Image (cartoon, rainbow over all chains, first blue to last red; front, side, top):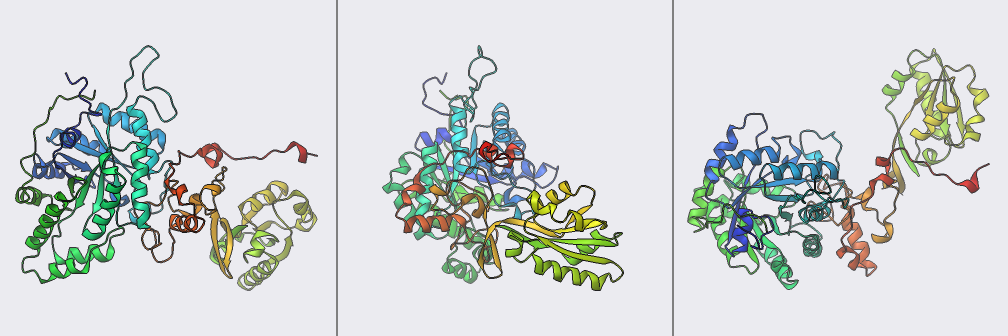
Length: 324
Length: 219
């Protein structure tokens, strides 16, 4: 039915973005044990509130339920997953196999990531892989969508069989707060060249620096090639704001925000207010196609934040849509 | 050169356990320059061992290189009568000594660290991973394989901050920041914009133990 609809994957996230809606994605960290009940609980908060939810892939190198398995569970609970896949743990063989596997299980969005170094996690003596970097990974997934493995072979079961490629909507991350700053837009341009469809950014607290980066993105016309989803994270408390300022790599938290959190009588409410102001400002920023709301261990607040931001209900899409 | 570091004395004592006559064999090239396994280090280790284990004999000898047949042959006679050779060469030297002096048990006195340089006196750092397919022409002669903690080929990841790497922001530089600065100085930042394809890791150790053959050098 969807022949010629111009969609690359037919995922809900792709349809929302292609229709020009301001997209909303969330984040769900899989559990650190074989007890999956927390996935159902977190999905309950996010269902019908976000267009898709990122399923992290052993974030900070701590072993968790795999992003594919947790993604399938998220689908059963009514959410569209964005499967994260880091380059740290798989070579090109395992990646392509898992992409085929994820696709046959119904996953349609992937987020290609370098991955935190294993020294941060609970197996610091492990060996890393990094066979590919995230830019090469994007290009590989794009080639697969076009019908060929990275090695050039066609994706079909036999010479007579039809091509059966995994048609993924391809995402990647970008950190406007990493250095060298001037390279950050170049990195995005390389990902665009590799074939990325959407970008989710690192959590934004330093709005002036984000806007400076966005200006460079717009100047290069990259916002017309790639959907940029701006990352936001609400502070739960002044303690969290301080912790993120002082201890989290690749982040910039201005002192003014920490002070504001410290002065507030109700820290949680102040954190939400700051987040709502950020979302408002991002919606006005040229080139921003949506927000990626990372409510770290605070998923239950997502419905309230999105309702107060006027971002619910989410738009309807064609649930049967296929890639053309 | 090959950079190495002496193993802790307790580990070395465990290895010489049960052996009464030990030949401490130094290597006079790379590991001598990085002050781990040359003549001087052999003397220091041998006297430390004599103090710890006065009932045992520790004979000292150092050859030019333990990675070349002719030099190892020089100690064949000396090694007679010793029941253990404690080699202070890099891993290649230890292995080759054992291969040629096959009647002896050979154990390593060093941990081999890297192919690197003497950055400062007493400060040796890694510069090459012997990936088998050099890319230094594209990166201002700063190696992304050796100097980026993730061996990335398309520029720094999101963990580069203030010139430092996420794995240890106090001590480890971001290799790609060094590359970026170098290319900026050379007026070649255009190289940062090019997409680098996946690397052929079969040229590295992933392709199995490597060998270089040259007919013109054969006897």
